[in-house]
Length: 285
Length: 161
Image 1 (cartoon, rainbow over the protein chains, first blue to last red):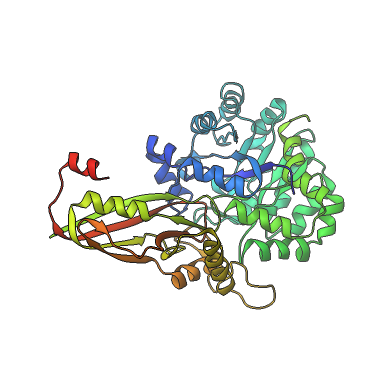
Image 2 (spheres, rainbow over the protein chains, first blue to last red; image 1 turned 60 degrees about the vertical axis):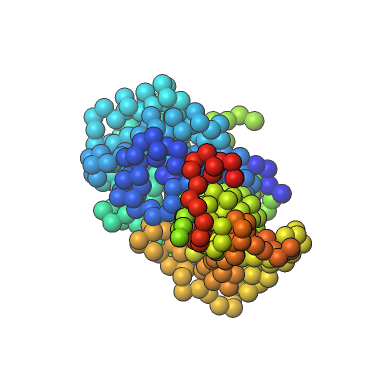
């Protein structure tokens, strides 16, 4: 039995209480994030976590003002949601194209209490190693917060896959050794490249929120035992892998069960589901 | 002739779960003013169902276990797969719950009862269940009561429910 852990990758897009307060969130969910599921009471999110044996979830916004003319939840809305439930850990998002992005990030962390940064290069339309984003990375490093990057495949029709190619993150990892970055979705389909980065750079983490065909069990078995042997994750990357579901594109229960089914040791599962997330968030035991 | 449609929300708390909604159907009948007619309930979802069976815990477990055997969420590895396991662009996500849709078809999505003298008529062992095949989720159930009677005012509805 795992200890209660953290889902490091969720989007609170379907929380009905917030959609009722801010009707524009419904449009963002449907037209920017392209999710078609019914809106759900906050309780459903909590029950999803319970069913997966998790205590908390990182909730993510997206500021794609320049590239898409839209935000998918603002930093203030994420902070408001976190005030509604102690089970949420709020991350900020800023638009790297905007000159005041570093200042916005500082305010989101210092004034709103957000604890990380979410960037989505394909949706936000920038290459991760573009110097335009470096002031944001410097701010995140100075604030001591992790950056969760979307990496790999993107479903959104307006996004371009080239922005999520893992080797475009190498300069970031090399130039900011004290900045902890997480490549989401195992950067699928470029799992081998993402693993290479994580093997070389200890400040590079991977999250497990990958599902692009079949079902969570069969897909993760393909990516984490066939594309790259499970032993690489278990032996070499055990402290750089965090559980993420990408809820609500996938239910948390299904992704957690899939990770549980792969054959990791209990010790490694505790690292993936709990300890590594706490390290990233700066939680000391 | 009275035709009264009521929508109720049912919050499932588990992946697979049977939730007794007999009382809510009876309340809808009482609030409708229908004296003699029928009450019909239907889930608004395709990975959930409605069915009528005996209201005991052991049978609830058997129903769920048997439907899961017939239409498993994850077929045994190396046996067969579901065509539904693919990206659904209209939903923005993968469909990997074919087994739950199939359970919904097998178990049914609606149930029907007579209404007599303003009361739901059912066998002494019969209970109406909402059945969750892919929870936890907040779900909608439609209850429609049709028949002869007298439409009630707001105060009378509250009294009857």
